[in-house]
Length: 145
Length: 354
Image 1 (cartoon, helix red, strand yellow):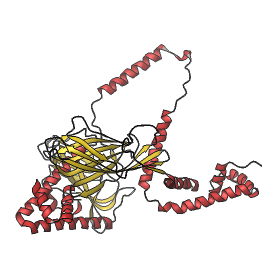
Image 2: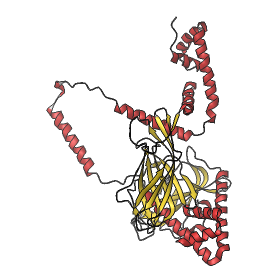
Image 3: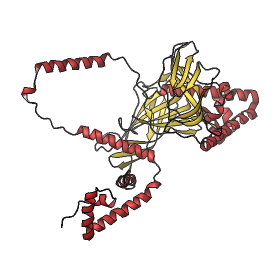
Image 4: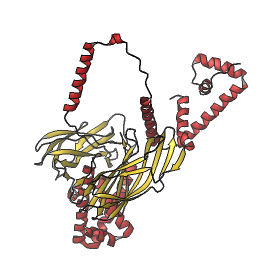
């Protein structure tokens, strides 16, 4: 007997499967004690996690971490080697090359001639924290960049 | 959000329980970089209880360290800002530690506590986890040294100008009214701080999805070089009444709730403006939308073209709601701390130092 994928069992446990997939998995689970047990475990974990969720208080920090991880993922993706296909010789056009070169020169000139703009200070991400002692005051910020 | 998504989110939240926490290696975890011509030199650094915790693809750095520096220049140091970087591009990867309200004579050492939580990617290999760089030093003559990447020059100049104003005020009080007068003033300052904190926690003012303010108003501060002309949802219309060019105006806003309580609204810094003498402009209101009966704008600080700043005088503060609703300057908070912890004699001695 072939079993549904683990992911489908998890989605079935949380009632997130599409209608027809749900019918298929439900029929299998009814006749398969092992998969029924897996579904029951998923439901138990879901209930436990749902109860645990309200205890989490550092949502801002968590959100910052998640944003950081997304940024890291994007950066990691950018670092992956890309597959470069060979351009057929017939694509080469002297006119296109001249046009592209002209555009690049224009863009470079635009960048070079752009007036100096004052660099904006970083945006504060976390709330400013102030600590006072008799020798001075310490003010910390964490920035959104 | 679906149940499955909630489950994933909750699992992500619970992941820190499984996170791996390690102390930082003092030899190669932190790199402290000062410019070659810096008036401050590094004496030592202590990582203390700093920890690094791996959470998924990110490392959370809980810094509880200190950096001891020496004033190698010939002027007294009144403020320092350090830039602390764990990751250049990710949110939460960069922080700063400013230390205003200090007074460090030449050749003297001083310590800056660094208490920050920063994020960086998990990267195998060598190299420091955190870079600590000097962003700026402010001296007693308001001159500045440093790359100023964080605009710390303006912030530190404002703090020092406020410090000079408040120290002069308490010195005048001591001279005019003696020890008892100074004690009364300090108790009044402490009471104002306590009242303000109580009022802020009791007042029902919170950000709204769309702004709804019944009345916009403005407050004229008598000695301000910039005069408000009109207030609206888009900001304050102002005119430069001084004979000097202005390059930055910081607005403050006081929100009044339905019960008539007034509190200062936290607002992010405004964008720079360029205002010639006599010129008019609109300074936009920054910050989140509010749903309050009344919002009053005022000029909180002004930076002139030469880098000097204007802040309201003590008389301006006393003659308006500003003394009551605005947070005291860092220096006034420090002086109150000296009085609280060491008593009136220590406060008088502190005021007589400079």
